[in-house]
Image (cartoon, rainbow, N blue to C red; front, side, top):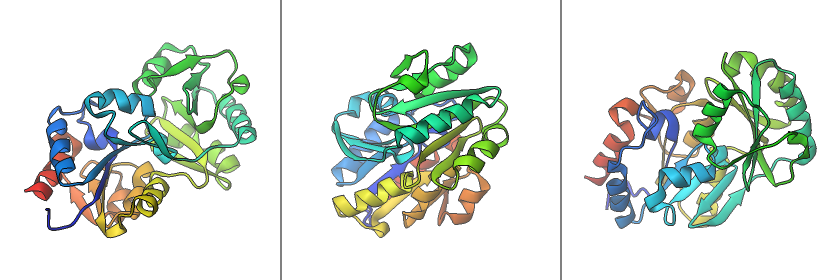
Amino acid sequence: MPQQNIKFIAADMDGTLLNEHGKLDPEFFNLYERLEAQDIIFAAASGRQYYSLMETFSPLKDRMMFVAENGTLVMHKGQELYSCLLDTDAIKEIIKEARAIEGAHVVLCGKKSAYIETKDERALAEISKYYHRREQVEDLLAVEDEFIKVAICHFDGSQEKVNPSIDAKFGENYQVVVSAKIWLDVMNAEASKGAAIKHLQNTLGFTYEQTMSFGDYLNDYEMLKESYHSYAMENAHPKLKEIARFGAPSNADAGVFQVLEKLLA
């Protein structure tokens, strides 16, 4: 058994576990088997949709844990372990505010599907990378589902174009997080990858000291805070490097793989 007594490992996807082309190295599947043999739970922790994560890890989809949609939904072996919903009234206000931002494209994220009303081809190509199960609708305000997140895409930068107005209006009562250069997410105030991991620590019985996590962006901040073995990627946002206890080589250099190989050595 690795000397550090790690029981749970969570890795972000884009910019972390995936390479610079957004692809998963097939070597991961062998690595997963070796972790599982040591009774270590490995979770993909991502802003991506649960259905998208299942496709990426399809050979393991019935065994692996998924911390999806930035921690608002945790699924394991097809069972929901945790979810953090967004109230419908809030969603309507967020959608209306986002619609008022020129160049913004809204994705309404439900448990059953993602919903979009944009017909912009560039936006649809970007959205389809992360949301494999999606429905085109005429009016997002009329959709019925249980909602976990509103994601807003802006090609001129989410920090500059979306965050100022959305954070000013919703930042006090909701979790507003810049999850990538062109993406911003609005979630329940309690929601984060870190909150999901804390819930798993409490319910599955592993500790902060037995938790390892890897991330590269601001939506990984709370997750790293909930892990003693916190790793910021070489390509990570400076704020993440400030709080991480350890550093990993970049995603282009398969940094997560390098650290886990050492753990399993």
